[in-house]
Each structure stands twice: as C-alpha cells, then as structure tokens.
Length: 615
Image (tube, rainbow, N blue to C red; front, top):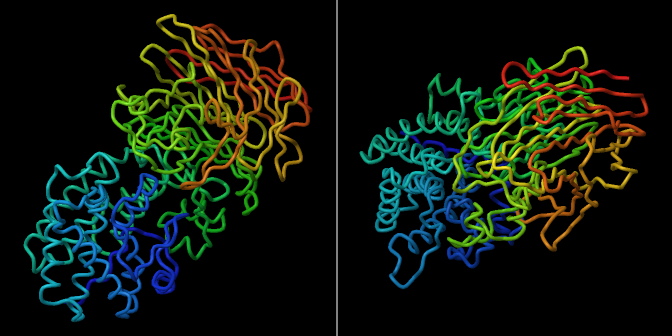
C-alpha cells in the first residue's frame, strides 16, 4: 500500500505549500504577531509566561510542521520531512518520558493539542519509515509515542465532548487510526471509536439549524473546514454526514459581512474570507457560500434576505444594494446574537448585534483579543466568569464592550446560571415597507426580564428598542451601549450624534426616541476607571473605537429606544410613546424627508406586529 497523502485537517488555506514550507525553513515559523520561531534549534517547549499561552499551544500542536508535511506530501522532497522528524524527536525526547524535576508545559498534553499532534506524528512516522529515514531505536521511540497518543485519545475522560476541542481530538484520532488500521490493531480500534464519537459530537455541537453552539462564527468556520477536509481526504464517506456538512456551510454563509470578513461575535477574529471565484469554487461546496465570499460574482444567493436560527440563537439580515459586486459590498447587513448554550467562548454579550451598511462597518463587536493570562480560582474575575486575566481580554468579554444593555456596571452573568439556549422569539418582514424586525427576550440576575426589538430598513435606518423590568422591584442604572467601527468618528449633533461615513452622501445620525434617557459623552480609548472605547481585530491587537450609551437611572422598569438614520437632519418626535409593559410602542421622528412613524406590537402570544409610515 502506498503512502496515504497528508491529511490537511487544519485547513490553513495555503496557496503553495512548498513556498510556505521554504519560508518556514529559512526564516522560522510565525504565528500572528509573535516573533519567528526557528526550526533549526530546539523549540521553546516550556511556557515562558502567560502572555505566551497561544504560541505555546500551537507549538505543542506541532503547527510549525504543518506546511512541511503538506509540502512533503505534494513534492516528496526529503528536506521537508527531515525537518519534521527532527522536531518530532525533539518533542518526544522532552515529553515522552520527562524527568521528575522538569516541569512540562500545561499544553504538552492539552486536549486539543494532542488531537492535532497525533495525526501529524502518524504521518511523520509512516513517511519517514517508508523513506528509510527512521529505523531502529528512533522508530521505536516515535512508535511508542504514537501508541501513547492513542491511549490518551481512547480514554473518554480526556475528550472534550462538549466543545470544539473534542472535535479536533476525534479528527486527529480518526486520521491517525486510519493510517495504520491495517497493520496496527490499536489504530483500527482508534479509527472505529473516532467515527462513532464524531456523529455524537456533530449532533451536540451544532444545532438542527446548522449553527455551531459556541457563540463564535469563526469557530463554526474552523470546525466546518475540518469536517470538509476530513471528507476531502477520504476520512469520511457518509451521505448523512455530507448533508449535515452542507447545512453547516449554508448557515455559515450568513455570517460573512458585506466586506467579506466574518462576523466577529464572541471569540471570532475579524477574519477576511473574500475569495476570487476560482478560489471559492475550490474551497467551498455550496452556491450560497461561494456567492457571499465573492460578493455575488459566483454561486447563487439565498432564497431570502434574512435568516433565523432559532436553535443556535441568531438572526441575520443581508439585503444587497444592487446585483453587482459593488451592490453586495454596500449591502445592508444586520446580525444579532441571541444564544447562551454554555460558557464556551461566551462573552457577556446577550442580545448584542452588529451592523454594516453603505459599504462600511458601522456598529461592531469587541473582538477576541486573545487567550492571555490565566485567572486564578476564587478571584473576582473567576467568579465573574472569566478564564483569562489580561485586562484587554477582560474588556473584550465585558458587557460594556458590546451593543447591549448593561445593568449597574455589571457584566451579564455567565457563571453560576443556567444557559437559556436561544432567546430568539419572533421576527417579521414587512414586504410593503421593506422593514424587518426581530424580537429577543431573556432574563438576567434571576429577577430582571428584558426584551429587545431591532427594526431595520436596510440602507436607511435602524431602531434599537429595549424594555426591562426587575420583578424584585429593585432600581438599576441601565445603559444601552453602542460601539462604532474604528475608522468612524463620533461628534455631538444637537441632542444626538453625527457619524460621517465614507461613500455615503448622507451622514449617519443617532438620537434617543423616548424621554428620560440621558446621553453619555463620546468615549474613545479610555483606560480609567475602566476600559471603554476599544476594538480588537486579531490576537494581541486592540485599537481605539468610539463608544457611547443612552442611560436610565434608578429605574425598576423602563424602555430605551435609539434610532440610527442616514439623513442630513434628524429630530426625535416628542409624541413617541411606549406602554408600561413594553409590549406596544409608537416611535416617531423627523428627518430631511419628513415625518416617520413606526409602530411595534409584541403581544404575549401570537405574531410580532409592525407598521411603518414613511414620509
């Protein structure tokens, strides 16, 4: 039997693996903004500091050999494999039987790192033995190491079934097992066990609507790309799983912004997914995904301009401004996150949303920043639901960093509370006016009920309506936060705000529509008394971005409604009103075109109702 090609499970989307591998060999392996790691010397396996956690995880996953193994599989050139063998031997010599006085890195046997490392070790062992570059004691040592990986992965106690880590563990176990299944009984058992585990994990980690339940579209992408790669390299050939995979990809297509970036909810970086049509055809399987990543140049659009994910807890609107690429780039796009399934990658961002329109990101999510600094147990951060202690990471997780309600300067609870699943309740599309509205509802701090309605006319305006009530009759300071994209400036404009948007003939204006709410000052790059006014696009990168809020003080119950509108003038009409239950609201304003009236009715049961009277 010939050498099985390297399983490209990580799906790093490399164009020319030999070119990348040569760069790694000559200049070192690079992760993000970290310094290059040369491969011609022992790697820094120990965790030097908590700021190096992400780097150390990727080292113990053996990411530095990824391009080398890809290049060797394609070209057969020995230099790529030889470098990978040396790295493998270095790691095994250090960790397979470490001395008692040598403290290993916590990532040496970290769940996900073991899964990724196992199939890379399997390819190195297989290819080097076939090529005569590994024999005798060296072969025995690496074989014993692979057996140790197989034992680790066979134990259910070591598998993170509840999150994406377990998924990568099973993918690695399957690839490792398949490679030696015909000659190594333990590996045949590993492959069979992995296939059974995979079915259960897909059902657990993805909702019936195809959405990943870890509150982060970029993790949805990563897990899906691995699933697609497993199929592409022959690890899976199952029609039921294939149909599930296509549904997952179609769901993912809704989380691509008009700019081509992925919606960066939760622990998602601001990743660019835009591709040329030929690249999209190779990378993606569904016409919907090919359509959005090429800005309409390939594939086919979805059947509707909005999508509800009642299991995953999202609602998304995408309405192109025209049929060509420019029209897709200027689409009106609104996405709301309304799911709480576990603490995994969950920010304190309940019912937050992001908005892009007229060719620009307008209201943004905070981003991930990075998994930096470990929180000690029983500390205030630990009790508040944080895993990481870096203050910039703490900020990005916080409620005040998202477009949502904040109560009394506290983060919305994640620890010690039961996840509510999906808070998506009802939605309505009005064909006559073009307005789309979505209602979400959940509870916080056990006694506070809150509901949010987003009413959206793409290309024109967005209304954010919030209602809350504390059943314990306790008063609160409630802030409705908003965060602008970092390229936008914010200026006071009478009783509201003005934002100049490049490419838009009209500025974006914002006003509070209901009485009682006070306006904060514009906040930018604040560090004291707490961080506010920042945005993170990628790991260890954070930049200033304007934030502001409307607030109610000493309120047991109340409503806040903010209007954003593209217009040369904007004035709230004092005739706007809402009933005490928040179930009926009449919101009025005047702009350069004339008076507007939006009526929202959200009865206890039945359908969400809206009517809109334009000028």
